[in-house]
Length: 138
Image 1: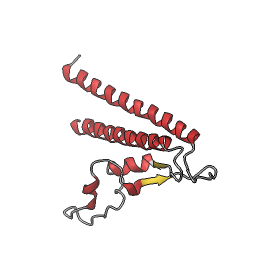
Image 2: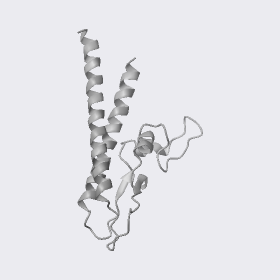
Image 3: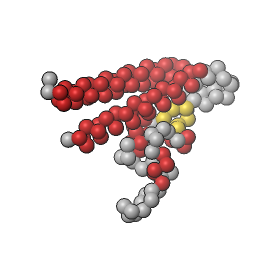
Image 4: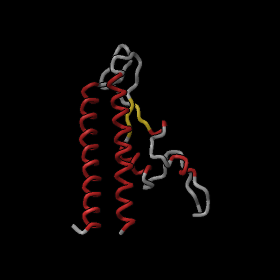
């Protein structure tokens, strides 16, 4: 029972941290919309979350052939994305200054990610409230 509770909170905590990192990336793209040569960055959220929670091996992680072998995945256990996991945005249309920021796409991504961040916070809050209610018996 306790493992299920902590696993759920760990997963949601990782999701929240990655949503925050994605929001930072999108905000950086928006801030550099007029910077010549700037290439917009983003992340594949689902793939990064799977790697952060251990459902997938992290980028560059070596597979272990035996449970006693030391794995390379321990280095990236902080949940933050490695530079190799970030994606480059493909330009919707060519610009003379070679900037790939599409403000419409960035605004939509920013709003979508903000809503999902808020939903994750509400889920964590609800989960904690339910647990406290169960513990206190109210």
